Length: 365
Image (tube, rainbow, N blue to C red):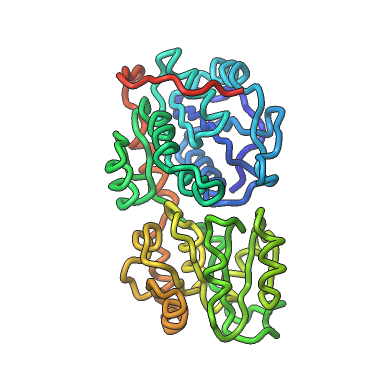
């Protein structure tokens, strides 16, 4: 499931596609973008294609200010160009709007190469939450970044509609899946949280201001609240909410066991574009409580696998009543194979795509 952490020169014999994936989000980051891109590579390989990743670990990096877990590449432009020249990919997908994404975008426009992009992260909302930067400014830059793309991939119909309303063009759906070999119910599982008062309310994800975790931790709920994940707000929340259990980052089987051991998965975010953790929880047999916003509305809607409510406490208490078998059955509809076929159908069919909107963006370092 991990993204390959080194650039590979072409090895194919022409029977499948050679896909270059340029991403500023890569291990050791743990988030939905990284997991999605990793699974994409695995599924492409099963279909006889190859995924070649250009990631920050191949460059000199510095930590992102205020978010040391994320490292950004320096002096990327020339080396990204050299890598893409050597690879000569059949398709180029730019997954993020960071330094590597900017460098790849510039290469494609300069050389007349078609490329696709994807909208994974609500940077305008995140920057507004952190430094009060007007969202209209950031959306203008993000829109210009994606404008020359053959297609801009969005995870849900609601996100597609929203982006179109903001002036984005050529939006196509690229949904998400779940790894059923990792995330599944574990009856009789003995967990280190078993002695803690029940119900066990679980959150998994980045511990950052945009995730709205405070709204969850401030709820008057019986039992124990459990936070899995790392991020810049972790120390602050530990000091403020001393009765909650903070597990830090969990991975692989340990993470899967945390999902399965919980009584309810709580998703307080109002800004996620999808929420891969939602279907990981459901695949583990754990019902979901969330706000009725984009992400939960697309993934869950009115399915009897949890509860969406503007009162998050009400959502939590009602979600406990959901049938865990129904959660598992519902999650079975989310397939990484189907998502990969969606991705392939969104790629350019021609070799050169002319765009009237090849606007320059600020130079990347």
